[in-house]
Image (cartoon, rainbow over all chains, first blue to last red; front, side):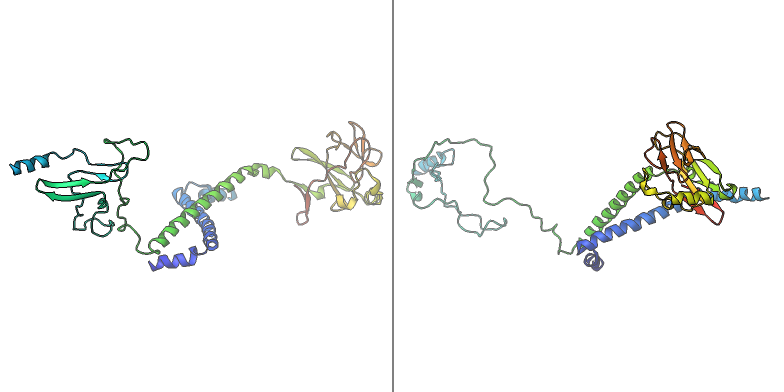
Length: 63
Length: 279
C-alpha cells in the first residue's frame, strides 16, 4: 500500500512527470526488448550464424 | 340474525380499490387508516409512522355501527379533464424511492485504495503503446532508406596518382559519367582569371573546384543530357557535339544552348591513401 502511494506521489501526481516517465520508459523498454530478443535469437541459433562459424573459414583462408 | 347480516356485509366488498381522478382513494368499507408494519426491515423509507397515503379526514371516515364497519367518503370532486380509468395496466408500480441495490460492500475503503496499481497499469499500457508506435514509425521510415547494396554502389574511389597532369579521366558513378581533370597551372590561372560575373551561370572557379588542380564534374550536358567531349570547344574545355555547347576549363557554360554549368558532384579527397571519393 505504501509502495503504491509512493509511486502515485512520485510519478503520477503531476501529469507532466507521468507522461515523461511513460516516454522514458518506452525508450528504455524498446532498448531492453531489442537486447533481450537479440540475445535470445543468438542463443537459439547458436552455432548456425556466420559470426559463430566465421573463424573456421577465415583461418582456412589465411593458411 | 345480526351475525348473519354482518358476515353478509363483509362479503360484499367492492372488487376494486381505485383512486378517483381527483386523487382521493375510493375504497368503500375499507379501513384506510391502517398503520405501516412496526418492524423496520426496509431501509430508506423514512421513519415508521402512519401511512403517508392515508386519506385526509375530510375525505373519508371510518365508523363502527351496529351493522359493522362503515367507511364514508365525502369527497366527490369532479374530474378536471378527460378521465380514462385504467383498471388493467402493465406500467411499473410507482415507488416512492428508487430501488437501488446496496453497493457499499464493493466501494473502496479510501481514495488511495488500488490507486497506485490502477495508475501503474495505465502507465504500463502507455509504455507499451508508445514503444509500439515508435517501433512502427521507425520501421516504416526504415523502408525508405537505401538498402546496403545501393549504398555500396553510391560511392566511387579513384586513385589520384594514376591521373597525370593535363589529362581527363571519365569514370562511371551512379550510372552517369564523371569527368576528372588534373589541371595544369596554366589552366588554373585561366579558369581563375576569367571574368565569371558576366557569364551565363556565374560561378567562380574557387566555388567549383575544391582543389584547383582537380576538377570533378558530372559529364552530362545541362542542355539535353549528352556527354560532352573533353579538350575541345572554343574555350579549351569541353564541347557538346549534340547542340554545340562550349564549356571552359572550369566546366562553365560559355557558348551554345546549355543554360547551366556542368554539375559538381559531392566529392572528397582522402589524403592518407591518395584517393578521390565521389559520393
